Image 1: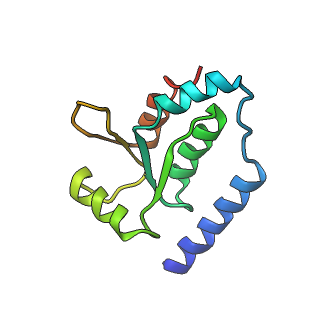
Image 2: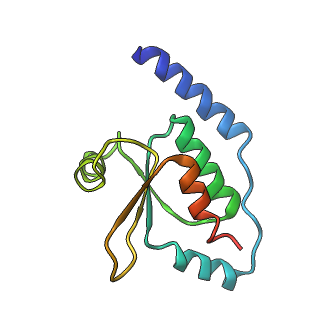
Length: 120
């Protein structure tokens, strides 16, 4: 099963690379404002996960700057996701607004919908 997942993951990454969306061209000031508004967001993900690819493509298409946290490469990220988020499911968006409790948003469709508010 591992080999099949690995092969499918590489195929997904290949097509994601070939057909990668381009970021919108914005004024530097506007882009800086958008970057500031997304500083509190972190995406816990896996590179070959098709749902994570969907979210990353949306992030790139909307020109958002969001920290990506690969839970396979960094054990601390994986443990944080399980401990604070409650489960090891990706993609997961960590929303840490100042003065508010941290929110963990699962499901790629919900994440993409949430992120659309930052794209002008």
